[in-house]
Each structure stands twice: as structure tokens, then as C-alpha cells.
Length: 292
Image 1 (tube, rainbow, N blue to C red):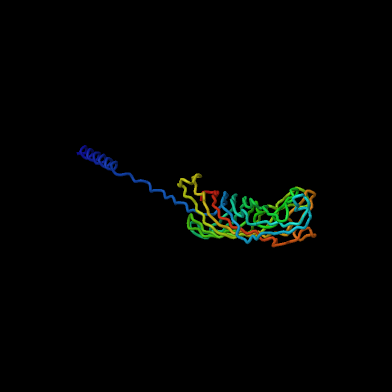
Image 2 (cartoon, rainbow, N blue to C red):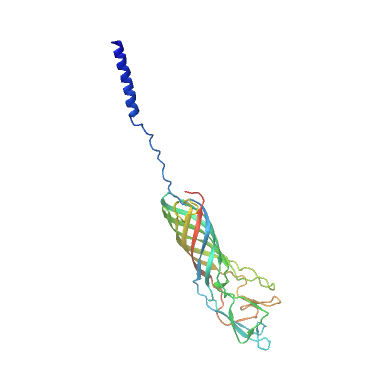
């Protein structure tokens, strides 16, 4: 009897062990990994290129001169004459450069974004900046002539701007404005055959849209969420300063000639220095440091 009970107990234990082995194993709960939310916060740097064109009223500059050697007769004798600078030639062209900046987004995902950006631009304005016509004689080939007015004297410009916008996840709409500067076409008169930029300052306003590429986009060559594309437009107004205002010629001896100065020239038409006004439409690419 005892042997029978022992055998039955052993059989029961083996059956229970076998049944337990057939039960499915309890799997570990899955680990939840939150998807990172994109934010525009961070430093960035990049490049841009576009097109600029004058928007101001660039009236022709007409300057009448006495017999002071600027205008010669066919025989080479000094005579009176009139110079006319068109001011309208090639007041548009390519612009390109780079930018750096910082954005801060108050709420990740969608929300208000504030920032600051600085850029420096090459401007291919004014290929015909010094084109002029002479009436009453011919220009003295020994004299250098420079247009005293107009947008065509711009070789480069830059801005330092604030930005305020609203982000819808990876799309940012923004307005921008701030300080602007530029130079080009100026002269350091009084020194023969020497030149320097005529530096100008002013302001700029504009706006744009910027898009951050998804990580898996084939255009995202960094394979991160930090590559952005933007398109923006700017209006730039650079105030003409008074340094060398109206100076338009210098001879080989270093003598300068300016409108209405010392009797050297006689103004025969509009020759005031206007503000430099132009608009820029450009596209750019930025790399934002930090993936999210």
C-alpha cells in the first residue's frame, strides 16, 4: 500500500512539472520610447543666395562744369561741358553670403519663436555705376570719374536682425527687422588713384518661412533633424552719409571736383544724394547645432 501511494505521488509530481513546462512564458513588458518633439531652439549657421533690385527713385545726376580740365575740345583744350550719370543702369543683380543666428522656442512642437540673426552679403549691383555721357566736348582721359549718387555704388551689405515667428512643428513663419549696413563705390578723395568704401548704415525689415527637414528625408544629408531651408524677402534702406557728398572726379594731381564746391563745378540738374533703397529675395540653407 505504501509503495502504491509513493508511486502515485511521484507520478502526480512529474505530471505537474510537465504541464508547467508547457505553459507560455510571461514576456517582459515593452519599453516605451517617446518620440522626440522638434524644437527650433539652438544656434545655427548657413548660406544663402538670391536676387536684389533697386526700389528707390534714382533720378539722373546732371553736372555742368566750367573750363577746368574735366572736359576737353577735340584739340585738347579745356572747355565747358555737361556730365550726365544715368543712375538707373544695372541697379539689380545677384546677392549671396552667409548667416549665423540663434532661436528660442517657448514650447516644443508648436509655439512662439524668437531669435537674432546676422548676415553678410556680396552684392553684384552697379556694373554700370560710372557710366556717363558728356555734352559739349570729350572727357579728359587723365581724370577719374565716379557717380556721386545712386544704388549703383553698392558692393556689399549686411544686417543684424531680430526675428519673431510662430512654429507649426517643423514649419516656421517669421517677421524680421533691425540694423543694416553697406558700402561700395566710394572714394578717399585727395589721394591720387586711391579708393575706399563709402560706408552707409540704415535699417531693414522683412519676413520669411523656414522648414526643418525630417531625419529620413533624402535631402537631409546630415541624417539629423537639424537641416533647414528658408525663403525670405528683405527691404533695405541705407542712409547716404555726408562724407564726400557730391564729389565725382579727381585728376592726376589729386585735385577733387564736387558739385557746388569752390566754383569747380556748376550744378545744372538734380544731383542730391538719395538713400540707397533696395529689396532682396533669397533662399538659404541652415544647419542647426543639436539634433532636437
